[in-house]
Structures are given as C-alpha cells and as structure tokens.
Image: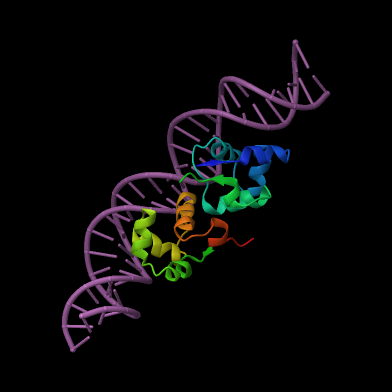
Amino acid sequence: MENSIRVRRKALKMSQAELGDLTKVTRQTINAIENAKYDPSLALAFKLARTLDTTVDDLFQDQA
Amino acid sequence: MENSIRVRRKALKMSQAELGDLTKVTRQTINAIENAKYDPSLALAFKLARTLDTTVDDLFQDQA
DNA sequence: ATAAAATGTAAAACATGTTTTGCTATAATT
DNA sequence: AATTATAGCAAAACATGTTTTACATTTTAT
C-alpha cells in the first residue's frame, strides 16, 4: 500500500527520527513504512495520521 | 481500538462468514475483530471499510 | 572540505495478526 | 421440537509488524 508520509513529514520539516519519537516507534520503522517495506499496524496508522495532521484514509492510498 | 463493524454489518444484513468471504479472511478473524481481541491489519481495515460502505476513519474509533 | 545529521539497509529476536481445525452455545427456520 | 445457521471460543501453526544493534551512504551545515 502506498502512503504520503514522506511528503507530509517533510512539509512539517520533521526527520524520520522525530516522527518516530512522536509516534513511539523507531526511525527504522518509519523508514521501512515510507519505503513501503510493509504497512504499519492500524494503531500506528492512526498515530501517524494524527501526528501528520491528516486522516488515515487520506494518508494511505489503498489500491482496489 | 473500538470499531463499528458489527453495527454496520448487521445494517447490511450480513453474517460474519459473508463479511469474511467478501474481505478474504475467515469468519474467526471477523469475530475476533468485532469482539476487539485484536486490531485488523491496515489492508484489512481498508477492505472492511470499503465492503461496509464507509471509511477507515469512520469505522474505527481511535482513542487519543 | 570536513563534520554532523539524516537516511538506507540487514539480521535476529520478539510481538501481533490470521488461518486451520474443531468443538460449544445461541438464534432462526421448518 | 428438531434442524440449520450463526456466533463465541481456543490452541497451534504460520505470516506480518516492530525493536535492537550495527554499519554504510547521502544530505545538510559549518
């Protein structure tokens, strides 16, 4: 599944490590998700959306 | 995390098994999620939202 | 040009999500 | 009242998500 985390994170001038801190995961987790190695858990998806000031449905582009 | 799957499923007069079929998981998975044993994966959350004619953000009530 | 910060990557261990099989209990249908 | 459909529950196996540790590469700042 694709997502707009990197774009939104950069728009907020935030590093992967900072975003990880705010969402209580490691920077490696943020990195892996941005690079679509795997999808976050639903709980983390909500945390990311909240932190990046958007919604889950907007942050993730679910294909079909 | 809480969700409105049961309510919406019943509104559509659907059984757990049917919803499982439509979203390609077993009825046990639907049952466990409805009874909040665990959260679905993000991909399944999207499938459920689509099938139940709503959005992920609406279907799941993320607390804080 | 150098140093510092940020990002990419990887393997092992651990945590959580899903299937399979099977059995019990409750609701709906005949 | 009996049968059938639906729902709850559980353990083992398997799949996916996250952390930890560590090192390499790229970008930004001095």
